[in-house]
Amino acid sequence: MKDHHRKRKTHYTFELTGKGRGTAHGGQILVDSLCRRYRLWERLAAIKGLDPRKRKGSGHDPEAMAAQIIFMLSSGGSTLADAERLGQDVVLLESVGLEKVADQTTLGEWLRAQTPESILELCKLNSGFVKEVIRGSKPARVRHAGELEIFFDDTEIEVYGKKIEGARRNYNGDLALSWQALWAGPFLLDQELGGFASVAECQEQLVGEHASLWGDDKSYFYADSGSSEGR
Image (cartoon, rainbow, N blue to C red; front, top):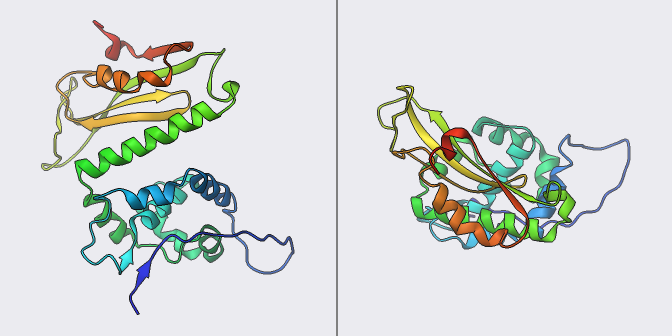
C-alpha cells in the first residue's frame, strides 16, 4: 500500500460529554469550514507547479501540507516545528480531515521547492479570497467610517548569509529584502518580496492591479513617509 496522505472532506457530529478525547484547538473546525466554503483545498490542488513530487501517489498532497501550515498559524504557532507538533493532536487531525501531518523537514523541502510561478498563483488565490470576503461582508465589518482603507507598506527584512537571492544593502547598510505589501481593510491583499532598488518600487503596480476592488466606492489610501515620498 502506498504511503499517500491527503486532505479529506469531513462531516461533523458533536456530543458534549465529560469523557473521551479532546482537543484545545476546536476552533480550527471553523477555519476548515471557511476554507471549504471558499473551496480552498480544491483550488490549491489545481495549482500547477505547487506539487513538486515525481510520484503523485505517495507522500503528502500539497493541499494537505498547506492546510497543516494554515492550521499551525491559526493555532498560534510560528515555526515548522510547531506545524509538526500538530500531529500529536489526534482529535484535531480527525476533525479537520488530515490523515497524517508532514514532519518539519518535509514541509521545509516542499516550501523550498516552490517556484516564482507557483508563488504567483498562490498570491492570485489569496487576492481572490480577500476580494470575495470584502464584497460579501457587511460594510461595517471591513470598512472604517464607510471607507475601505487601503494601506501600502515597504518593510525591510534583515537577512543573514551569503546566498540570499535578491538581498541588497539598505539605507542602514544592512543586508535586507524588501517586503512590499498592499492591505485592504484587515486583509493582506497582495505582496512582493525581493531586493528592489527603490522604496515602494511595487506600489504603483500593486495598486493598479487591484484598483477595481474599490472602484468608485469611498476609500482611503495610506502609505508611510518613505513609501509616499515624492509621489
